[in-house]
Length: 209
Length: 209
DNA sequence: TAATTTGAACTGACTGGTCAGTACAAAACT
DNA sequence: AGTTTTGTACTGACCAGTCAGTTCAAATTA
Image 1 (cartoon, rainbow over the protein chains, first blue to last red):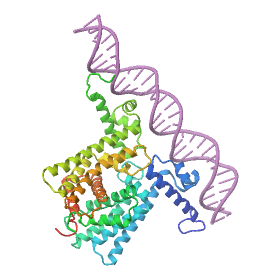
Image 2 (cartoon, each protein chain N blue to C red):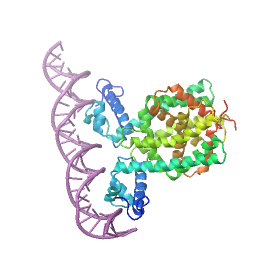
Image 3 (cartoon, chains in turn brown, orange, blue, yellow):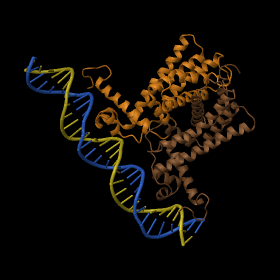
Image 4 (spheres, rainbow over the protein chains, first blue to last red):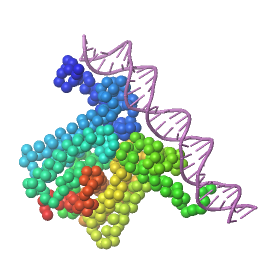
């Protein structure tokens, strides 16, 4: 079971179907929520028969869980890359933070629906995919926390800062600002939004230029 | 019709029932989402028969909408009070911002479930209560934007800042940090969390003092 | 002050529709 | 030649909303 002709990672055809299903599910669930979205809708939007959904995923919940894993792994990879890139170029930790803010914006710009759905589910309890979500959240936040800790160790950041809380606050800043951007002023450019957040991040809001 | 003994503003009994329904609904919906929460569950949790829900609210959606309105009006009032209080005491705009951050934290501390539910619904589209949510969101954000604008006008904040985006970012910072606090390190004190956010807000993260 | 009436508030069994998941034979891919 | 997809039909659990009937405290009456 599972080998077939194209061995590495399953057949392309199947992979394509799964991708279509992800894309259909992500927008529908972002808009309506998990429970209000029906499997029939997802199948229709993906241009696929309902049976195909169940051929590819064990259940609606499993489809959603794999969608979450898939999406967050993209984000985590992108954040890591941004941090490492900055390090290689000999930038400071503030530069790394800034690069990660930008990476976050790029991600949300490309996958606004996923982001929205993620935020909507993140703090819920008593849901089937709760544990998956926790794991995946921690992976992403850990990247930010890592940079903060390095900054504290290297004397670049104050030792007084609370790493965990500050990381959460930074994530929240980017998340909410970006969702606001996408929802209420989508015509603005990414650079524009990034500049506004950089200014806030570097404490240049209060007067001193 | 409608007079009865206790005239002013409807009977106390009815009001008490509605309050119980709000409280039951807010935790259930925060945990499970709107669609996954049944009216039977809400009624049971409130210690009331299902029919009572429909005697008091036209539908499940209406119950939820009124819950949203009720909750956000509390938040808005609290933010306004914080801002005005600071102004009366002759504080700066940074002080006002800081007071509002604290007011936000106090609110989330008291009503974590409501906050969670609000965040989960805020960026959705195609839902019945969408317009209600927009109105109510704007009321709250406007308070923050107002303080920022006054700060810019008074020369206290840089003219370069983007008021709308910065307001969103500030809200996000408080929101996500507070939800993280409540979810993952609930033993910490409000003062503690407030201090961490103040530090971030005043740009004291990067080295200097 | 005891008996009666009123009506707002509440109850919970019931209905009609919806939806996740199943079944499977035929078709299409690779 | 095996894997994947299709299309249609079906089942059974679940749930929003309804409605005929009940409760009870206050108001009215005698």
